[in-house]
Amino acid sequence: MRRLKPNVCVYDEGHVLKNPKSLKYQGLIKIPAQFRLLLTGTPLQNNLMELAALLGFILPDIFRERQEDLEFIFKHKASTRDADHAALLSAQRIARAKSMLTPFVLRRKKAQVLKHMPAKICRVEYCEMHSNQAEIYNALRGKARERVQLRLSGAKVPNDGENNPLMQLRKAAIHPMLFRRHFTDAKLEKMVDLLRRHESEEFSQPRDKILMEMRLLQDYYLHTWCQRYPCIKKFDTPDLTWMNSGKVEALVHLVKKFKKNGDRVLVFSQFTLVLDIIEAVFQTELVQYTRFDGATKVNERQTLIDDFRDDESITAFLLSTGAGGTGVNLMYANKVIIFDSSFNPQDDIQAENRAHRVGQTREVEVVRLVTKGTIEEQIYALGQSKLELDSKVAGDEDLALKGEQMVAKMLLQDEGQTMAGSDDAKA
Image (cartoon, rainbow, N blue to C red; front, side, top):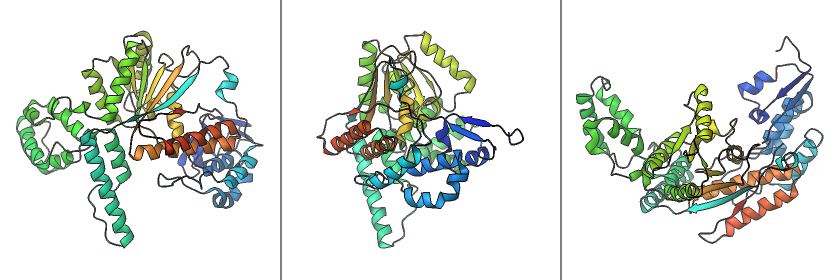
């Protein structure tokens, strides 16, 4: 491409160039095009520095030499710890970004170019933690607070294998089987001996190595081992343990209601292990489903989509947000459930738009499950602030105002209340 010296280069999914330090960015910018055009539905995903990176890509002679100035003006990373995300939504930063972008951006929303598309309605459904979930969550929160206090006092923080408290809290808000609680170290000691005795070909490695691997696994994964190897079946979790989660309870209620009404649903999760658990839930509840994630071969994906299109007895399509959130058309479903939210709200918007596409004939409902009283509420509020930033920079004041009202409503809401989300914007 460097030798061809093209006059024009057009880059679809331009938002992947948001990091100027990435190999993709550094490689593609070497193509000496006279004119570059980026196409994206999500130009701003997290902060204003991403916009500066995109501008630096299309006009490197103008913007890259001023990179340090742009970083000084726009650098601010949003955090769940921010009370109101004021720095992210600074009026001065937004005004400067708008003035920079106006000459270089043509923005068109879906409603402007697809006037006959059915509506997309977004809402949040709050879930109550089950008692064992709350026990795990509160213990993890207490441990995280202790670690913070130790850091502030200058004391040494113990290396207990849980150095990412945010991820641990997210897991507790989703499902208890994402931890190893049932399979104690004592049980694993007995299980590894039985596996080495009865499944010697598969477990021929040294005992300590197998045991170390098992200690890193979660309850649900070890449950699948008990299903696969009869010799350790007696150590399995109690039957239907996978149903014991507030989110699972809400999911089952929604999917049963959708199935009864003749609706079909896409279910998105960030984690493949969560999809494994949801599979067990659907098998228990006799819900027909299909699935693909990042491990699904590319040449098999269209077959799964075709099966979902042709077989209306398949109520649900399970997808990982990363693999199924972009590039596929699933307008055969009219309901979308975001089981767990991404830190980047545009990922979830891309996912929900798999159903809200050309060819959709029914109103699309998007339900986001959020566990009440947990880190998920803060992740959701942060996501709304990022969407509000995108709307303000784009000059969509009505949508920005709607975002402000949504954040305020969430912060002030009474327990048990739900609220509607804003529609998506396209660039």
